[in-house]
Length: 240
Image 1 (cartoon, rainbow, N blue to C red):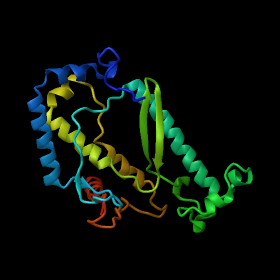
Image 2: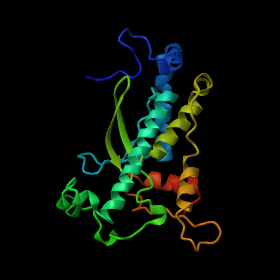
Image 3: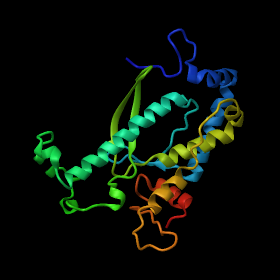
């Protein structure tokens, strides 16, 4: 059974959505539809697109602009953040073990063949210690809400997660089109993500690196589904 994140059974808004719902009810539908079209035009002109490879229609698609945001309260986010951080630490601990002592295999928790036959397993990494002991620095955790206090993780994208640039552009567009909404609702800022990512990458520089490290974003090129994100993050971080 689906969970309605905005409305309760009696049709009234859930607490995190009350101010947004009041604003939404005051809007003229035609005005909102026009704003949504304007956003799509901005995304099209800016090139904010993506492609789903393997799909019958692999053409470039515009990132959808949703006028109804997913609102998570501060207390909910703090609890979620703790769980996400715990998962990231667990994933890194798992990789540390797989490429070193392999205790999880010897204990019979995970079959050896399940690891060694996995295409992502890199035998050349055995015994190697990455900078700071961190194997995966950026993880995209897909989360769905199934109840008032229930969240489920669908998957952890730990290799080349993408999508953060679309979220940042969506937030910026929303703020430009509906500034009065952000005056009414206290929203945690997200625009410092590229700065934090740059700081994370700078911290990986070899001990002998002098001055400001040089950071580069590697990309397969313009035909890659996430090329917009590669270009966006490189520009925002001042990378090459």
